[in-house]
Length: 279
Image (cartoon, rainbow, N blue to C red; front, side, top):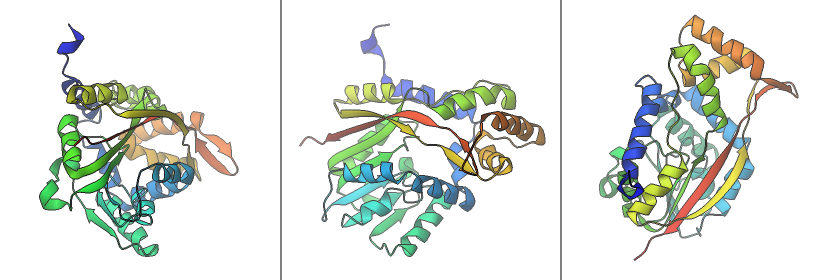
């Protein structure tokens, strides 16, 4: 096959479909619907404030800027952005994440964030949002099956910049699930599409983004083995006692003791892609 004949948005769809089937035909984002899991995500994000601060600092915004944060989670970026800009719209479908986001907004006295509790695929730009936005950003939240349509909608909402963050190559948790999935579910685990496919989608759309690649170490900390099992069971869908026993054995071999905590080491290669819209 001639490489020019490849439809890279279809490649993305195919890889995303295989990944979702690996989640046993379940929306993997549902793990964040619960308040407890969303709160743990928030606490984990606060342990890596340097990465968050750098993301906000390196985005071209000012006091009058308007920002659209897609897949905003518990406000990891939305709240820091809100301190620097005039308005932030946070799009986040998971009920648990939205609950923590609103809670943290109240705690920190942030009032210039509007929340849209929808999947990006279901958002109507003119009906649900307040466009245009100087910056549209999606940070490690590109779980859309139709990535081309998702990007086109981002372009529609933005008046100037689009910033996307994604992964390059298999992550440490990809490798972790590759080890565990056959033991837990009797099938191979298929990771989602990475930045190589994404860049080719851009290229076919006539978008030629800037790229910056960086390594990020991002370990998870637990007070006990039981907490680790309870936290990771929903992510790998270990529902039965037999499956949880497999997970417990795996974590017992992987967790490392550090300053009174149990640490699951994690690292990944990540990519920042951004561009300024042409007139």
